[in-house]
Image (cartoon, rainbow, N blue to C red):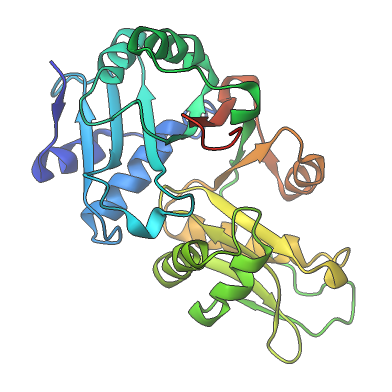
Length: 294
């Protein structure tokens, strides 16, 4: 029977997770590990529910903000993040009937493995909930950096006088303004939270102005990468990425990120950086109940 985990049980779950760098289809496990660890460390300021299909020999885990207590995540109004990890489809089916999720409201399934899409659609039909339209499904590849070290870049295009380091909270407005899902007060609040709490990387010009950056999400993936248009083609994003990769490796995280199918430039640059991906790691950000297409 499905059940929510206590704090001590959540610690046991984290300790049970073994992140295998050879398993390039395990991004859900990596997201579970990072989210649960950050939650236990007090880095996630909202209450969350972690639910398993059974305990302690679980085969599926669902986690989501509890009782809508995630205002900092309100980048899209009234939308709730839902995550799922499973090794057995029966476990997935059981958790999809969880009462901790109201499947009739606006939801965002974060990096949902496409291997479970038919099971998800079957569940939604049984619940009388509309299946997501094609335009509400954003397929991605999961790109992993599977090397033990990351080479640094001492020079960028020869003579550029730039420096690299973490972003600062005062840069939240700039980052939000240039983010695809940003440029709102809610998005700026979320970006401020990320910059203030988790690792990030930024290339600064001679005057200390940010020109290229990338962030680390609370669930462990890298994202929100951007280079100002007038500074593109100079290798700045690669420099920022290498800095964040090195930071993740030092902290014991496997660097990974999601590349949307339409974003070929991102695919090219991350392949140059040493990232790789396989078909088994395919996933999608799935908006339910009118988030996007309406």
